[in-house]
Each structure stands twice: as structure tokens, then as C-alpha cells.
Image (tube, rainbow, N blue to C red; front, side, top):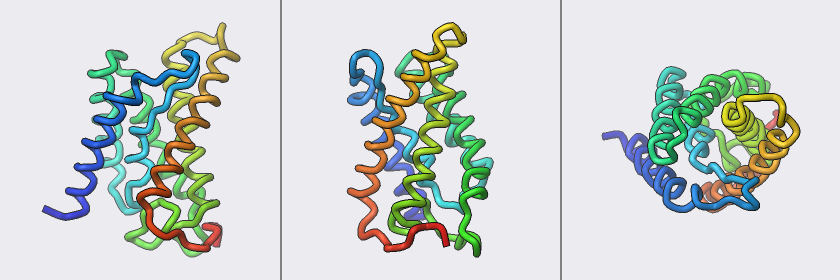
Length: 176
């Protein structure tokens, strides 16, 4: 078995366990919810097949829905995130394009690039998730507040995990 695939499977299990056992029980004022499980989709290699990202997003969201009893909301939000990922990567591509083995992370892409990329990805996921949860526009500002607050909290967790496990960062800005 490929060591990278094994590494992603172990990461998948650990992130799901962390999300289900710890992070699902954290709600700050009933308003802020951290959803770190999307980190795995954020840091998949650029060369990962699009269809594989979509299936992974759906499966990851569905697994969380089973434990969170949210009737497919996470599956829709993570599938949406997986669908948007190639477009965001294409939009943020360096002038010379990506190297085949590049992994979106601070070490390979730099602080500014990764911070921008991760913030966009987390915001898209949370926007879809919380507006599906509300399923109405009458509480638009409240829902938008939840989106922004939870995005900031999750983004901080993504940065912490990235800094802990990425090794030494490059000095590149990421926008060559």
C-alpha cells in the first residue's frame, strides 16, 4: 500500500475521531462551532484526482452526518467544498503552475498563500453548512454571524494543525 495513501487514511480516521469525540461537543455560546474535519480536503495534494476529492468529501461529510445526526448537511457542505477546490486552486495557481507533487500547505506554498487558500475553503464550507442548517433567509444576519465566527475559529485550528505538522515553512509568499 502506498505510504501516502496510508498516511491519508490514518489522518482521516484521526480527524473524524477528533471531530466526533471532541469538537462536536464544543459550542461557544451556541454560536461558534469548530469543524476541523475539512482540513483533510484542504491539504490533499494538488494532483489528487477531482473525482477522488468529490468522493472523499462526500464520504467524510456522510460519516460526520451519521454521528452528528444532521441528515446530510455535512455531506452537502463537504461535497460542495470538494467541488470548489479545483477552481480555487486554479485561481490561486502560481505563475508557473503547480508542481505535480505539491501539497497545499505552509511548507510548500508559504504563509500568505496557504492562509488565503485555507480561509476561502473554510468560509465556503461554513457558508454552505450553516445556510443549509438555517434553510431560510429570515435569520440571514444571525446565520452570517455564525458563518464568520465559526470560520475564524476553524481557520485558527487549521493554522495550528498546519504549523504543528508541516515542519519548517518556506519563506515564499506563495504568489510567484
